[in-house]
Length: 107
Image 1: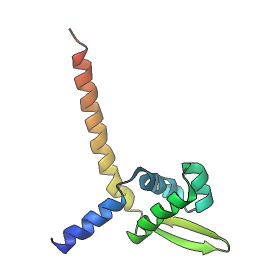
Image 2: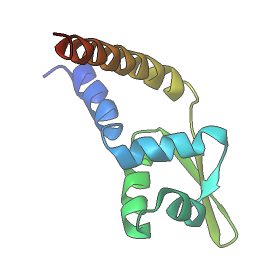
Image 3: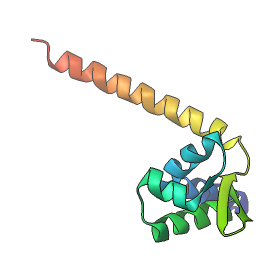
């Protein structure tokens, strides 16, 4: 397999979980501690830590220690430019689905 394709697939794979996408959205406004993300995302700390490790390994988030607290932030804000077209595609698909459902209700 082409190494470039493997790298792309690994990167996209890091985005392929709802919790990881929620983490990215949570960090959109700025850095956050693990404790705060546990509260806001309502996930177990052990699960959150695993997902953060995957995102860190993919180069999507960075971490830094502030005394006893580890804070995470988005490494490169261009990640949102990657996610935007995906949201647009999904919106189109939803609209198409609504259109089909509306036609089904007609006599």
